Length: 362
Figure 1: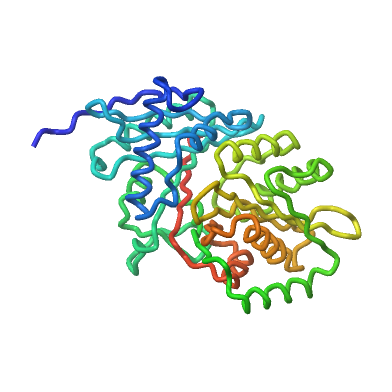
Figure 2: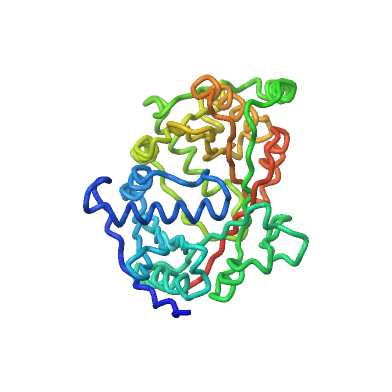
């Protein structure tokens, strides 16, 4: 059998729009990555349109994103995305590496990762983050690799785990990927709502679609800034994010351009008027699944069932706006016991685990 030729690693030019001659390579890359996702998850939950992917890569005001592809015999067979947060004191960068399943084990992933690491080093960053994904069907009772916190571990014999370890990456955090069938049983809904209302008398919910109201914009931005401070991150380095009203608008507009606008509910402390919690769901223009984005309860307001309260209200709004949605997907840090307890009470079921790996260049 003819030995597979070495890949050519080349920067992918991000087009201004799709369905043009200049966008052909970009659209090929999107199609190849969709095939990788379907092969891993055995569904199309993470297959996206070229328009959606272009919208994310064109949103460069707060993150610089660079894409290189691996080409073998004129065909794209893998890619690395280097994502650089643009905060003034940022020290991290994220690398996303994927290779088509039939060509793994031939050095293509190593070549892509090496290119990404060169980009990170040239960019002056000292910490690299990368991810591995593990569907529930691949989890078993054998040896596992564990992060410093959380009860779950990743299969020690996973090719992706071995790949990360051989290249000097350390497992910093495990996230649980779960899904909720909608609508929830009415009895479960009623029980959760009664409990939340009994503990949250000083709070009310406020919801919006697509864009935050101007009168809440700045305070909502301040609450979103707490996501990198108040969430569990015991084993990973994160850059603090500075959120302003302009950044909220950029984020909202990116998701609108992707065809996945945000549905948001916040909890407002009635005596002070301050925002105490929020939750977000991206609602696609079609299909039967939506994705849970951030959920946060500010530290000073915990213990009032606000996570449950805002999630229930957002789900009620979701049912009114997009009754076709039958599944909600969510990700939570494995050590975030309070939020995982909320999800268990809602009826979320485990679909897989995601590993956050980090490597220091200092």
